[in-house]
Image 1: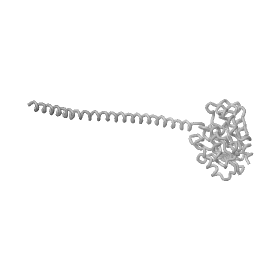
Image 2: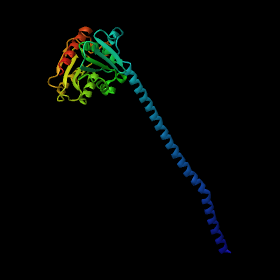
Image 3: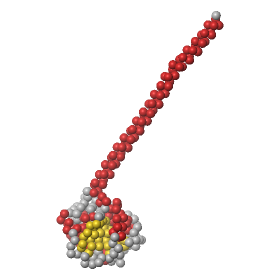
Image 4: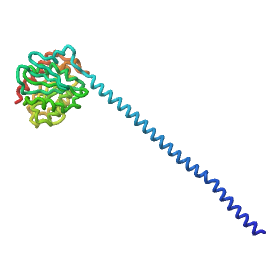
Length: 289
């Protein structure tokens, strides 16, 4: 009887242990499932947070880019009372073809041409007076309109000008402010360019040994140009570069758009500054051989 009781007790203990494990097993599985589910939720929340941050960054960047291009486009344009320089007269025929405005002399078959790149945020029409006056001396002048009024976006636009005007055997390129810098970049890689005109501008690259003839003009009252860079750029220009500082001239009066933001007040009239500028560019073109 004692042996049977002991055997029965051992069996009950075993059975109880087995039942307990079976009862606890679902609880263990549920705890594991809960932990994995929690981890997945946390992962998904992190992914959502990252996506929201990226979306916000993309939105801010898009607004900035759109605002930047609107700012560039809403720049400086030819003043209404100077619109006459965009019209043909007895000496110059003016014709606009897409992004190019041609100023062609009527009194001579021009063989020399001048391609002009505008300054930052400045519409090419603002240089109509400058271009018209130069053309009246017998040179074909082409003002190039740039995407969003920013020359860097249209550096190679001079290609079409040269291609479509085979009668021009000598080409000079130039520009105002940043337009001059971009024009010089174009000239470096183009064998058709023989001269460069910098107005309140300078090259970024060394062009001292590339065989270009160079004219550099600026005003003594120009508060926009970086004078330190202007002076340092002399090391990157040919030794025979012609430098002209126009006493009393500012940045704005090289064109006809009004006053450029931050510019100084000129001590000479717009007409006088323009006359001096035109005279020097015409002399420069005349000496291109």
